[in-house]
Amino acid sequence: MRRTTRMSELFGTDSPKGIAVAGISCELAMKAGRAAAAVLASGKNKNSKIIVAKDKNRSSDVLEAAVCAGICSAGADAEAIGVIPASAAAFLVGEHCADAGIVISAASRSPLESGIRIFNDKGTRPDEDKEKLITKLALGSSDAPELRYDGESGAILRSDDAAVRYAARLKEICPLDLSGMKIAVDCRGGCAEGVAQSLFSELGAEIAEVSEMGDTADVDFVGTPLERLMDCVAENDCDCGFAFDTDASVCIAVDENGNVIGGDALLAAFALDLRKKGTLRHNCVVAPVTSSRSLSMFLEENEIGLVTTGAADRYAAYRMREGGYNLGGESGGRILFADDMPCEDGLLTALKLLELMKNSGKSLSETAPCFEKLPQVVLNVRIDRKKREQWKNDSVITGLIEQMTETIGEKGRIFVYENSSADPSVRVIAEGGDFGQINTIAMTIADTVKKRCGER
Image (cartoon, rainbow, N blue to C red; front, side):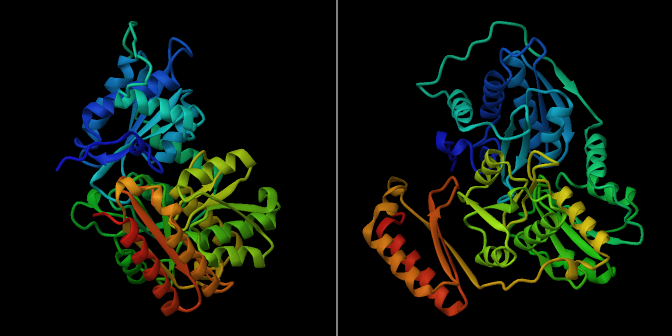
């Protein structure tokens, strides 16, 4: 059954999401391109330009053509730079003196979901007012201003040196000599493929590639185990391994012993390093409120502040810009080094971690900080669309959460929020020292939410 895209769903945590040629159809992609050009590039100068990048998803070519057509119909030029990581496109917006950037990419959470991610002329996400206007124009909202352009159409330009310029920037940030190191790389058929291997090789490392398995462009990063990468590290006696998601914004590391180093541990390692160098701005790290209690306890013990934001990824980036912070991230492996790149960059995260290892002379297992990892239970409950706001004010639900919070103790925590997905759902997170206790608590809250606000 075809699912239409509602206005509130067009911009998700990172981008418009939908099934390619269905929720995000070619028609909607064209309208989004035109709307983005009208809002972000209109009236600046005669030679306004928007960069368009894509991933390897089979739907990206047709969506790219549609987006470019929309941009040109609004009078701006569309510069297609090919398959490249999202952060590379954000960086190249400034390098190419463009007015905006658009990345066509499958969502990390599902390989079937394709969408577009839009950057302003600074390579960051547009503010909410401009997002709302782009959304209204793209979806033809009744209260949207009339979108008319009677001038000449823009041109479609091509650039084939985007990957080279991006790699040069990464090497400028981290001028490493990786000679003698062996690194396993799992790009999963995404945008990092080719770029990661050549980058690490040019820096002197030996590469062990994780063998492809079927159509890797259709691998769900979040739901796919890391066993292949762990096996590759062990079989090839690698110093470490890295896995990147579809648009290379996420990096998950595996140490020499085959242990996974998640986003919280990476964030903690970088925070300690920057604090030691005296470059951790405001002596604080920015992370979503959904980050683990283990991370907050570790930072507190090391006298580093933690600034928490809303659950969606975008809020951390907004808060960093507003407060002038230079390090932020989340447990899924998206790390933002604001002094170096305008958005999260998986390849930069890998290089920064390798830099830590080289400078310290330690292995990855010794470099990544060891902190107590509390058991965590995460449950999603689908709710009735009409009750998206009701559950927050339901005295039975809120009373139960307060009661359970008192029960769980100082070390634990309970967090309940609306998941930022197309289908309305409430996410329940419980953390604490006793798995049995937090599992019971999470199940009790989830069952109550389902009974009172669940989908009928």
